[in-house]
Length: 265
Ligand SMILES: [Zn+2]
Ligand SMILES: [Zn+2]
Ligand SMILES: [Zn+2]
Image (cartoon, rainbow, N blue to C red; front, side, top):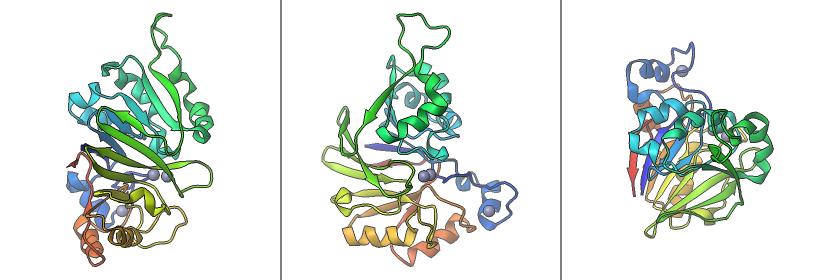
């Protein structure tokens, strides 16, 4: 399984506008510290989330990543996870599949349609017999989707009362990873046997009511015996990556994702 982290930031990019904190200052001189909104591409064929940065994220990825996209899943409908959907119309012309399904929870479709209903229509230049760029696909929590040898199971996590939010269990050849970019709480059974957890890095130890503090994710990872934890969806910690990592390592082993990072399982 190849996990291509297209974006490793939270709701706003790093550096933050007008901010001179150590994290933002580092991001202005070190590309590795720059973070765009979270998105993940699995096996260069299954795209998770299409936030405001998706167009440039895919432009920075190898061409094979563009041509291979077969489906796009939206974990939830916060702006940082779906507001780039219409930009994919342009990107999609490279895709091998004639129509790319957009997968989302039933409860989130009214929000998607309120903004992007037109991406499910034929484009102005398309003939009547041509398929439109995207097709809606309602997915239920717990339903397993297959892309070759890859099985993807979305499961519901607590995050926002306004919408359904999914974490994902990704399994290939008997090995599993979990993707939890935005979560407050998760039922442990969804993470059993997972070898790699990509966890919510929005807040270190602040209690916000929407995001689990990273220190809690570290404790959960240890409790469940998950061997590898990589934080993504990293927020504005006002510490450079080495400073933040030094803080986190006091609680347990972990890594910080970067934009463009590749993880293999
Ligand atoms: Zn988010
Ligand atoms: Zn800052
Ligand atoms: Zn969110």
